Length: 108
Image 1 (cartoon, rainbow, N blue to C red):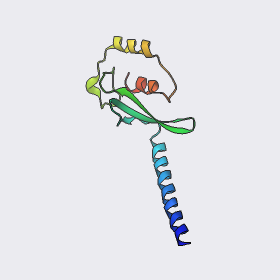
Image 2 (image 1 turned 180 degrees about the horizontal axis):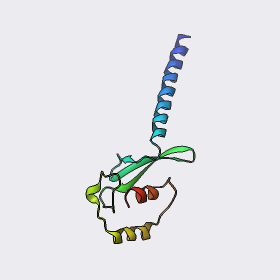
Image 3 (image 1 turned 135 degrees about the vertical axis):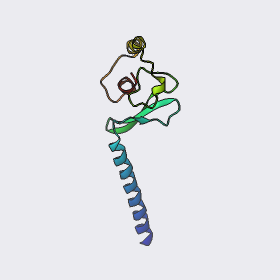
Image 4 (image 1 turned 90 degrees about the vertical axis):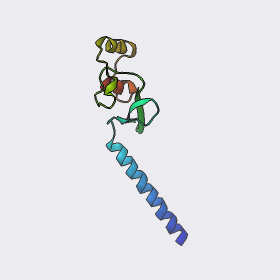
């Protein structure tokens, strides 16, 4: 009996911890932050197919038209012709669940 109570308490603590992690992640949905992934500038949590997904975008080794968050503003080039060439290669989208959307919104 004592063993069952201890296991239930441990299980309850794990469930509470997971719920807190999920709640914290939900607060950060659709808010870009600096990525921890190698060679990526930013990351953002999105809700896709009822699951929380992490999207990394922007290569930290390359420049962009204008970094709207400012962490990589030293790579800004402000060259409208380069921006137009970027859009002609990649296009634009309105789907917030893609790296293309976030790259266009934050970096180009």
